[in-house]
Amino acid sequence: AQRVTQPEKLLSVFKGAPVELKCNYSYSGSPELFWYVQYSRQRLQLLLRHISRESIKGFTADLNKGETSFHLKKPFAQEEDSAMYYCALVGFQKLVFGTGTRLLVSP
Amino acid sequence: DGGITQSPKYLFRKEGQNVTLSCEQNLNHDAMYWYRQDPGQGLRLIYYSQIVNDFQKGDIAEGYSVSREKKESFPLTVTSAQKNPTAFYLCASSPREGGYTFGSGTRLTVV
Image (cartoon, rainbow over all chains, first blue to last red; front, side, top):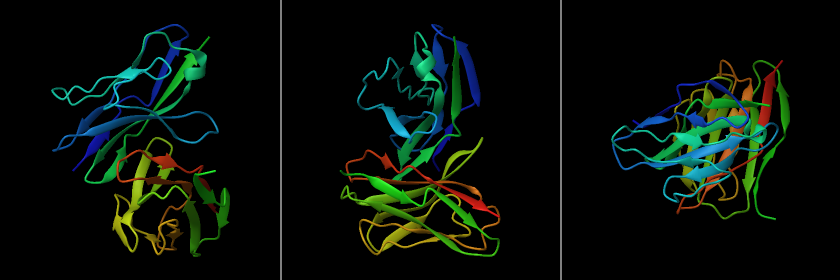
């Protein structure tokens, strides 16, 4: 079975501080991993996917197969980064989400 | 303007009634999905369909039913058997090569 775990329900930081949102997964095959973001009153939208290895809005995430992790990082948080972040995994033809982490960036 | 449309945005249902949530996409995507979003529980998969006239149960299918008679449409029926139907429901679609597009959601409240 596939599973995604996000251990933190809420992460609160000050503007300019580094951010790391944790994500661990379990899956028997080769996973395809994503980070989705949902800003207040907006649709869920894709932030990044591990196969593209790109940086979006200053965020990066590296797949660590040894630790089965896909943590989301940003060196300097901005107030507009405040949102709900979901880690997700595609396996067995379906997309499964973690429980989400709410990031709150204070001025 | 391609996209995925969910309707209605808000829906109220009396206890014991069935209600159907609409999801339509004009992206020519093969696969469609229904998720339920609850605070503290993230998005949980209810049903998904990889192709017309075929669908599979997700993690929390009990009390729900779906149909996929057309590629563009994947309606979700919340039946009276669903013990706690009040939630936010999200529909998504994806092409075979991957990438998911989400609707804006329907908030269902049982009164």
